[in-house]
Image (cartoon, rainbow, N blue to C red; front, top):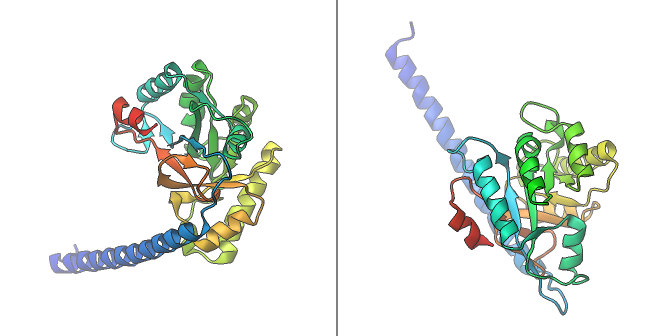
Length: 266
């Protein structure tokens, strides 16, 4: 039996280790955030002539876990989709999003881009049938090394979603904190995930979503220089044609908010 003082000593060491790691992570996060702010301020791209604002909804999982803000219950999700439909909103795909942002098509103020991050299987089993009821489709940003494992979508289901009008885009291979990795590792995550999807689904991948929303100037440069046209952050707000196309905002939909809160975000 381990003596109490030994157990206590071990516990103290664990607490010190966890605290030190948390402090290091906090400073790294603040450094990345500062870098993001500086980069955003000097690289915003203003559209000529037309100013377009589009709500881009950011979901993750659709399931029963009411204590997790990243999980929206099927009942709430159905209520939100019904509200959008009854309010005259229509979902758009990424090609339509591109045309609206460039001012090629007129924005009627009722376009919404619906996105799912990570590629959970319930996007197919729960969200897909609900969205079909209202004639909606979405974009899934998949982590390619997770496809077909555990609680994540298979390539077969992704193909079905694609055939139903959904866009399947990149969210890296392994969902890392990109700015904390080397240039080479970031490049691999960003480029190889694109190749993974294109090889399995035979479709062009040109839109990216940063894992956790984390990015540095280096990260953004890698994305913009390797075949992507847009990239979405986790910064809250409407996507706007005055934003840098590789720093677009989205509206995070929390599973812990009510319908009134959801409506106020649009």
